[in-house]
Image (cartoon, rainbow, N blue to C red):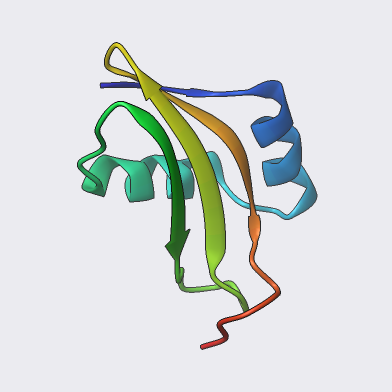
Length: 75
């Protein structure tokens, strides 16, 4: 599967200092079906879990946005 980052996702990653390699690693481990998905994953080095919103169409995963999830769960 091909993974693409939207312009918005790239800017959020830069703003919150989330490396692209971290997103690719998280998405590489997931088995995603067609449609929209919200992934919440605790990642070492971040105080809060990361929320990643993706859409899957025709074997292309597009990351819509990504950010630290400050509400709700803490480690």
